[in-house]
Image 1 (cartoon, protein in one colour):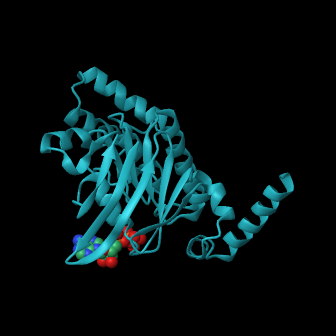
Image 2 (tube, helix red, strand yellow):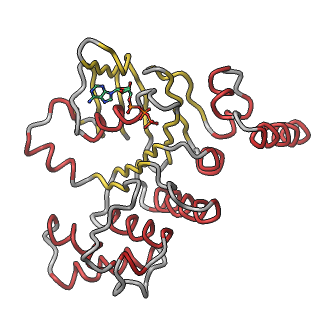
Length: 258
Ligand SMILES: Nc1ncnc2c1ncn2[C@@H]1O[C@H](COP(=O)(O)OP(=O)(O)OP(=O)(O)O)[C@@H](O)[C@H]1O
């Protein structure tokens, strides 16, 4: 579990995070949404320790990231997996080598254990037979799978995903969302996803945090979002006619069941 308490961040006197408090639960997919410039990236950078908050605390299962020594921070970083927007695989390495790399760098496993672990991660994301291929030889969806395999190689307790569906078609996005969700549940990971993808919000939003102008404006599940009467949230989520229709149909279904 990650607990954020009254987090503030200012740049030259301009406050971008205005006292945000939130709890990201273990084994859940936590989605952060909000308009461009609302402060999502600044929030994520603070969460992973790339930026220091002006004030507030970030508790990783009780350990306050803002108070850790360099050695403690290094240890905590190894408990974090990350999936970046463009997959960020190493072009000169095969898919297998990409997944093996963090194990080689940070684990104390033997060579055969590292190989076994890398293959386990590739199997888990359905890339069992793609280990010998280079990133340039695989599709965008396969690259995302490889990035997920690499992110879970060190068995992380916390997983950060920055726009995991960027550049993917809707069907592949759905598959990648499901994979992230399955892995989160299966390995009891606290997963935090920064996304603009409303399909993800509806499909895997076990917990959704809506940030508006540096404040936490609303939080709830993907079911709650259908019934939410927060105007700013509705304007943001149901901006498209298609999503307005989905909302109408789903609310009708819920009411019919009651
Ligand atoms: N290093 C920085 N120095 C000064 N201002 C910054 C810095 N980083 C971010 N900001 C400002 O903080 C605000 C929030 O930016 P942020 O990147 O967090 O938005 P975002 O919600 O992630 O947007 P997007 O969805 O477009 O990525 C913006 O006004 C931005 O200009």
